[in-house]
Length: 364
Ligand code: SF4
Image (cartoon, rainbow, N blue to C red; front, side, top):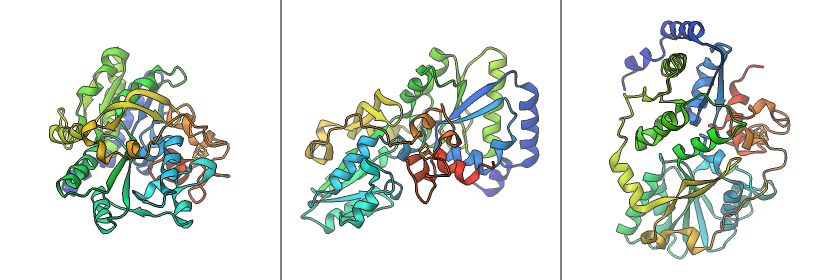
């Protein structure tokens, strides 16, 4: 996209006009949640958070892939990293996520575990080729955005006859989780700013139930200030009229149908399963597991990885933060025992985490 076009979506005059309309047209309170780490950061970085009318309440939801990865899943990573015959391949933001006893992959690496930070799952294939006597396990976390790439990597591994590559699949799917949030009476959400990247793959249809069954609006939204303000204004206007809609305000990047080819690759390898989410618990049908046909690349099957409820990290309120029940600064450890340099929980580890965004951008 040209910078000139982007400028339109950052135009201060347009932002001011939209903010004035929001202020004028808002009736009562509108509690909106974004479920994408990039939106969390964009809302803070652009200064929108402090400019929004008082009645517009911003809740940051479970949109950071590392943050929603359950404690017991992190423990499984650590257990696998402890094996002599395994090389772990992972994206960097998982390295500092604490598991049992506050231990993380970085500490495991310092103690001699073979953990490689990679920038693409395809890099893990290179490591597998270079280490034919070991098993290379890629830690699969994230949403529908990353799953197609991992599926494509598995397809490539099979095509190239790489027999020592595995994936430990802990992917989550976004639309079903939103129902769990709305069902939770402690979480009051009037509408959603829907994730741009995930929607690129899945399109609009999986969200339609939000308006049809829950009478709330949900809008696929870009990451510029004008994108976000326009979606909030649409939500306010619909609510004033007693309406709820699911819409796409990010047509320059997302088609209503999503990406059929990416879904084909994804569902050739993965199928829908139940998943444990940090702070939310088990959500039926909200995860992805490897199909029987691809069982030879499934680290869960090969190493008998069992995922069960694990106690939350002592003192960490990440679970409530991810559900929009608490804001990060309501956690007693925020900016005290918990900082980006010494994170107690994952919401402070990832740059997309709400606690890290609050720490970096929120003015007291
Ligand atoms: S501030 Fe730290 S301890 Fe508190 S919820 Fe966030 S990550 Fe957890």
